[in-house]
Length: 107
Image (cartoon, rainbow, N blue to C red; front, side, top):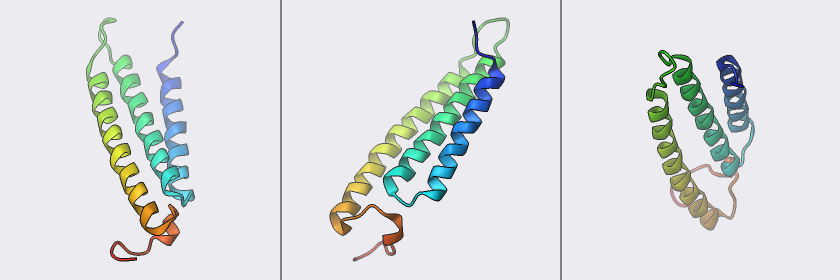
């Protein structure tokens, strides 16, 4: 039994919407980074669903999987750099709230 491609695209849209809402509504930097990860995973699901929908004669197309791997690499880099920035900001200002971050220089 196979899940229809339309259901995968709808699920990806719902996940992306939750990620956008989390990024826009929450003021905690860690939650904002998790929301970006959720949006990237929704893009991965869309790439893979599109690749499956456009497969020719039952033979899978690998373009969607290749793009998904690139997105996973970008997400890993974003997570490591983002976490390093969060740790540095917390050590400096004892908070990860975006509202309290009003300047980039000396605090």
